[in-house]
Image 1 (cartoon, one colour):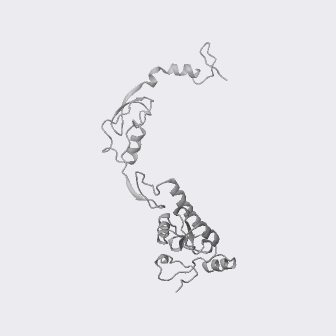
Image 2 (cartoon, rainbow, N blue to C red):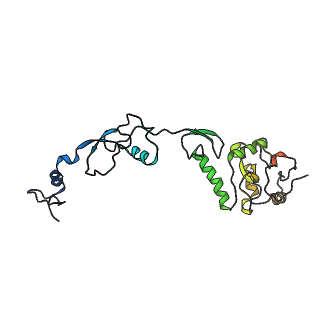
Length: 246
């Protein structure tokens, strides 16, 4: 290992026979002198340490660099947009337009400046993704939202569509009339609002199979048939393997 050529210095050699300390001193203090520069983006004056790269384009901040490359910055930057030191963060932010939209899961109307936002909260995003993923696991088409299921729950007078017992909205589950595992659709045309016990008891049975199964176990009957004129079931356009009652 070479050492510095300066007498009395035993530091490791870097270049030109000098260690890092004496090498920087030999280059001179003027090498890192700050110079007043004009920003290519906002035309503001700022201080920059000259690095010797005269060909490089000068920007006072990363914001100006991005706006010159990707946006129309000339009419939006303020007149006092000046950053005085190298790598300083600009305090000015580009204007963002707020937009109003309905959450894809719960249907609540919110206002945000995020262009890619589809859900009001992370919880709605997680629940919507879970419902969509469950259909994809069975190769089912379509998807549904909590807002659609809420409207069905209100149409059934806030009760379960099968046992007709009063059920809180938080306890309502999306029950697929024709099971997903047997080729049912994963959208509103194949859904009914159900309580947890009915949804668990039905499993992956068809309605007429479930009816016989409950009779075999001597359980109370549930509503597995309905009149063709009942408006609450008109959304069931997908096959249910059971004809409505007369």
